[in-house]
Length: 211
Image (cartoon, rainbow, N blue to C red):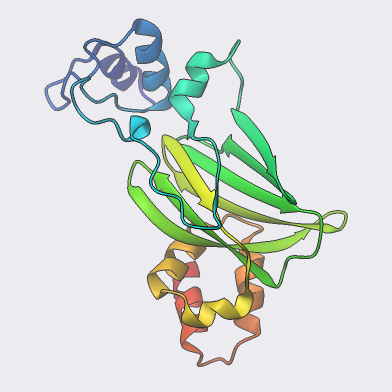
């Protein structure tokens, strides 16, 4: 971030940006400027403060990961914010992953490479469904990952589904999920494509989304 843009965000000046920082404390302004997060006017709706959307039956909701709020609450200045929870046989990690990005990792202690993990994810851009694919993770477990550009992440994960569930999945959900899968998770999508006929429409959706 340039010095000029940083100062603009910090003090709220600039003809093209509304002065949403009025009413915020200096510490909140500092972290929002550093992280590149625009603070909305205090009397405007803030997506990060909105209630979590309804949780579907059978889904488990994780605590919200709000980058700015966690920075304010952190002792010291951690290089990368990371939080973790365990639910059943799943270990969840949510962490910062580069400028403006948040990454979700889901680890299980068994071979889950034939399974898909559905997730409802809410960010600054609204709530959308995703499908996470598992890849092998040493020494004998599996891990699924999702990486999104967001200032906060609100996630609910559901019961695993067999990979055959792709046959009835919404193509838009598949496209969105592939685009949000970081390496080495893409090998999981490549494996699913390899197991389908070359002219299979689902395989074509995955290949197109992978670029």
